[in-house]
Length: 396
Image 1 (cartoon, rainbow, N blue to C red):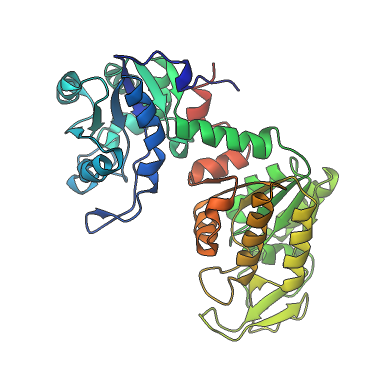
Image 2: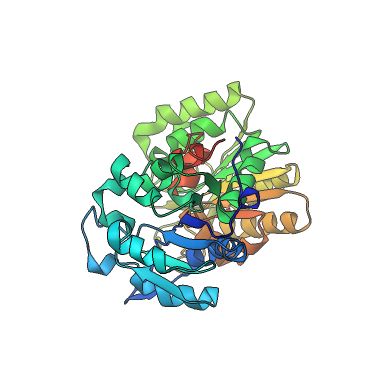
């Protein structure tokens, strides 16, 4: 796939309509995590330095086509001004006369934030008329919101066909990193997939075993695979109705020469509570009242050896209940080891998904990975091999 980047654009005096993802977490009317605001800063800077008028568009929450005051983007103006170090204008609508008037007042290098796109039903419906109204505000379109690229909405897909379209800096970095992880990776490639449910990652597992050299399965979903192989899992969370599916995936991995790593030993407890007495068990040694809550030391040691013998690592999902010590040990150890290899230049490590990002932050190593995606659903769909409408719209 080829896409235009901002260094190919004539920016001076142009109106740049920039799709960002400012769907930030809020608590008591204040932003509790400004990561997504910060992610947009390189693109905003490049556009301002190039003399463009910067018109920012984003969704926030799920107003479902209605104007919901508590879902306004206006509270983001002041935090954004502090990050940019310059004034940010705000328009009370994202299309029509209000937006057009605000854009008309904007000077080259100026920044304007428009109101929540999803206040209009036409956004999520990808309505051509709504997309045309958005396009009327810009001379060029910049998509800097990979996290929304899996949605064919007016602001992510429709408008990209109406204006010269470019990938913003955040989008470019994301696409480059993902290409290095699965598109054109340096082999061998090791995948780690964790989390609780096999059912939520069936497409992911089926796709990855056809693409990877090695795949380690952890977390609650590993229980289903262990059960499918005839191991007793006690009182553990387990999707027993998916045993046949798990066996199908094991067979698919074998046919595609993807080496599958399932737990060799596990950490169990009777209660999923902080500080609960935890014991290491071998497979088949789980009592009826015990739950599998983490990967055991032999499993983690083998995973480290697999990392040693890989050139690329892609990670989605924790290996245990990492939020509750002592069941965080497996995830923390593996994350820190992957970070160590990345810092030494021995591996390209790309990770993504909400729980994964939280786990890497808890381990204090998110900044050491080659790339950590905060895109959530878009990252997962990309890992599943699906074509993302917002990315396809940039293809030239």
